[in-house]
Length: 417
Image 1 (cartoon, helix red, strand yellow):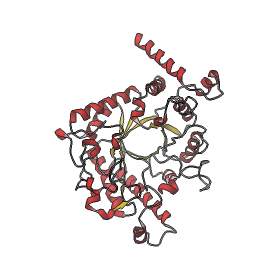
Image 2 (tube, one colour):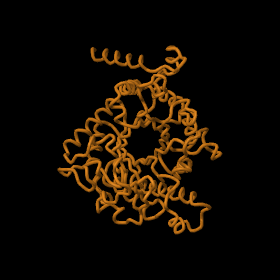
Image 3 (cartoon, one colour):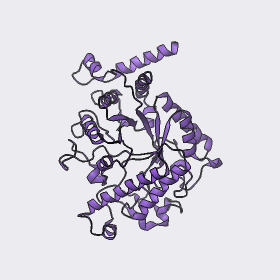
Image 4 (cartoon, one colour):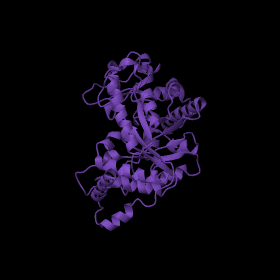
């Protein structure tokens, strides 16, 4: 009883600290952002666990299997305490793996050196899956298809020397593009590259009991990409411009991967979390009322097509902006995506930017967890939205106010399920 009263008091304190909109009274805010009637549906409540640059896991590279297990268990216990039901674990951060693979070397973000295995024959992905399922949590394997390196400050550009000899970029350097951002990428325009990426995903499905294969918004890294020779070789004159060909290259990867997944397991879902804007209406007549970067033109990812053609099982656009943001309004984009998935069999989850929360300026929209709470409430009013995925785990774990708000929000839903 005392524990229950303490939780109620803590929740009341957090709610009291939620920021008011400028010019709003407490009564107006409570009316606008109230929880309202609990929704009675089994929604997606996911969280991204990023491994690149050791953002979330592990805190720092380690070969000690006990350290790696302990950190994983802490994360999964917290996910369970939050009443979340899915983890999107980044198992292929940059041309390397957090699992035993015949295609990719062990990740440097896991053990500190690419190709170096953990001690005691430890397999992180197998461990994460087993422990997640014990807690009734889904485990989705998050892969980055084209990225070979992720340069951090002070590291050399186009650093082949840091790669393990077994890395495909070392074995087949002609598959690699040296990009202006200093990183190495597999070339999406080469058919063998697509086949290799697909084979790597199938390997995961065959060897691990994952609930899904997941990709985020990393396709072409930008418009300036050195692939003119491949366009001449593989475009075969069938495209009006290189941009159309690039989009088709990504389409071929996505459709090929979807087909391979279903051929190997009907129980594994395939989803993509793209940049939140497909196209602005000023650039494309079907676009959204926005003025930001566009996945269709900047990443050559025709994310709308994948929904309309029902190539993927779910889409989770990263709508990482606040409600009312003039350039890219969360409300407008949520409604646009809801309209895209309508009358399809593709589920819509919203990627939500909990990493943006700050506590320095109470006049900013991301001050405290209030914006996230309002976005969750807005999601409930659109039946096409089937849940949320939060980026990222540590942003929740290190913010007690956000942690308690999400815990309370989803416990209310659990009480009526």
